[in-house]
Structure formats: C-alpha cells, structure tokens
Length: 95
Length: 373
Image 1 (tube, each protein chain N blue to C red):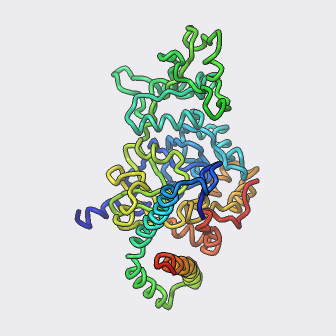
Image 2 (image 1 turned 180 degrees about the horizontal axis):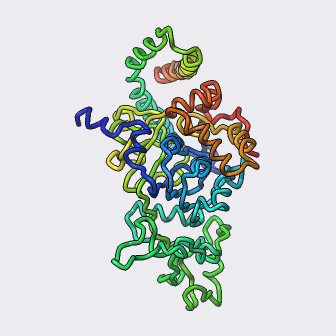
Image 3 (image 1 turned 135 degrees about the horizontal axis):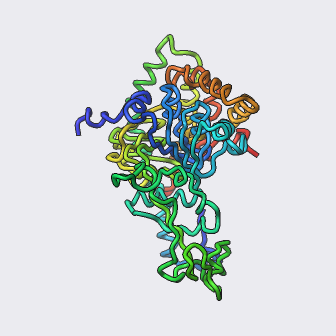
C-alpha cells in the first residue's frame, strides 16, 4: 500500500521517509479507531434500547424491518472490521 | 453544566417555529440545491401557516418552492432558485412572482451572496467581490426601487435586514496589485477571470466610478433574523457537526441573530468532542435544536440518505399546468394537514420509500438510485 511521491521510484526514498510514512499510517488508523471506540462506548445503552424495542409486540412491522436492516448493516461492517483488526494483530505481533 | 441546562435548547419543530418565526420574519434557509435543506422547519411553517415571510437563501429549491406553493413568501432574496434537473425553474415560485403573491425578488450571484454571509460571519461591514461586475445584478435593485433601503425620516433603518445599498463599486485601492493570476510555477493560471486581462491591460475601464482602474464590487453582510440549517449530528450542548459539503451553512449560521438547527440525531457532547476540529458551529450560537430523522427529505443528507429523485419527478407531474390556487391546495393537502413531520414522513412518504434512500457508507450517498440527467 506504499505510496510514492510523484516521479520518485520507491527504492530512492530514504529509510527514514519509509519509516515515518509507516508510523504515521499507523497513527492515522489509531486516531480513527479512538473515535470509533468513543462511539462504541454507547453500545450498552443502545443494546438496552434495542432489546426493549424489539420486545414490543405492537412495534409495526416496517419499523421492525428497518431496525433489523440497520442492525444487519452495522454488524456487517463490524465483521469486516474484525477481520481487518485480526490482520492488524498479526502484523503487530510479527506473525 | 446541569442536564436541564444542556437540554434547554432541545425542542420540537412546532415549538421552535412558534417561538422564533412570525409573519414577516426575515429567515435564511441553509443547505444548497438538493443537499441538506432544512425541510422539517419549513414544513412546520406550512403547518402553522406563517406567511408574509422574507425568505433568503443561496441556491434555493424545495424549501422555497414549498413555501411559495403554500403562499407564504412575500419577499425573496435569492441566487439560483429551481428544482435542479427535475424542474429547472421552480414552478410555484414562478407563478407566485408572476401573480404578485411574491411581491419583491432581489437577486445576487451565488458567489456574491456567499461573500455576504462571510462578511456577516466575521462582523465585517462588507466584502469585496469581482464576480458581479459587468452584469445587471449591480444595477437591478428591487428593494431600492421599493423604497426599502436606507433610513427613514427618524434616522432608523427602513428594514433591519435590507442594507442601504445593494452594492457599492469602488476603484481597487491597491491598483490591481493583488489580482490573479501571475504565472505560477506549474504554468499559467487558466482561470477565466476577467481580472487577468486587467492586470496587463494598457487601458483600464472607467465604468462605475469614472476613473480608469480595476473595479471592486463591495457587498454588504447578510443579516437575517433567523437562520435555519440541517446537520447530521448536534450535541446536547448545541455543538453542530455537518458531514459532507458545507455549502453556505457555517457562515450563514453565524450571520443570523437566531439559529435553529434541525438534525438527524442529537448525541452526547462527548461524541463530538473526540474530534473537535470536525465540528463547525459552537453551541452558544444555537437557539434551538430540533431532532427529526429523515427530516431533510426529499433532499439529501450525506452519510444518511440521498435525495428522492422520484419525488422531484412526481412533484413536477403533479403541479405542472396547475393554477397557483391548485398548487396551494396541493401543499395544503400534502403538508399542512399532517400533524407533524413524523406524520408527514411515515404516512405521506412511508418508511419503505425512505429506507430505500439510505446512503452507502463507502460513497456517502446511494449509488443505486436514479438521478437527474
């Protein structure tokens, strides 16, 4: 995934440039993950609301379907992220 | 800050409109074209039937077409106003102007209007503009002809939202020194700015001031009583996070005396504090927070839902060729007879149709939908 500056062959980039490009790539991911973690802190409250709503017998079918579709979409992205995080874990531990 | 303080700005659309909008209010609507228009508040104005409005916006569409269609606009200060590819000339607005329901229309370019909001945001008395020079926007002065500019015999401004002049044109005090373009290292500037020619010209124009020189149009700040914008998230303390293109909203939000923000979701302040540089408007500017999911419908709210192309198509079919009275009836039936925006969105539009507009997070819009050609 390395990105060369225009017209600069990768081999000509200094080791320090490569190192910091890599370090700041990790940093960019960390910044995004920290933001995601702050959002995910609200999961317990969301879980309680979700359980309550889905247990409501008179929740109209279209609302129930909408909520389930949103939940499925959320989980799909979580699954994709889980795979990426596992790959990140292997990378971080040199496997 | 106590919780009750944090939630004191949260209210329903009905309450926000009752508190802050009256007949004749000078109101600026945010968003741009089919993007993030504050439809919840606009629909509530239709429900409450508040008329004689002085409506202003940069790039108007559905809000203004609906308000004109409901017979609620008296004066309009605008730039482009149409329904994009679905109806390039807004039908109800046109009929209302032709038949005198909209009494006055003042016109600026998108750029000069944007600079008016920039001036207001920073508390500046004017902003310089090269864009409208040479066009009849400079000389076409509707509010001036109507006697609304300047001061009355007691020295008061005739209208607090109408500046004493539409434009002022001056000679550039810096003699054209700062004009683009120079030859950049990457090559000559290809921007088709007429000022390019002035920089090297032997003879400079004498228009407007009588003196040869580079001219600058000055535009006054935009100072509405009320600004309404739509955002994706607003924290309980009023901090506003807009995602995607901002349009004129940030400048315009800081220009009005009262700011109503309608949003997809109210969130805890901590959520927006995590990356504060992604927030645009601090809470102390906000007078009212109104939460209404899908409330921007039929316009688009990036990351949440796209605009409803079918709505624009169907609306065109529904009103084209009808009289203004029939268009009033259409909007009355569609909106004024609904209890609130939940009623409108769930019973007039339907959750199935709304859900089909959901944005793909990879694109921020919905790539599967039909679009304007």
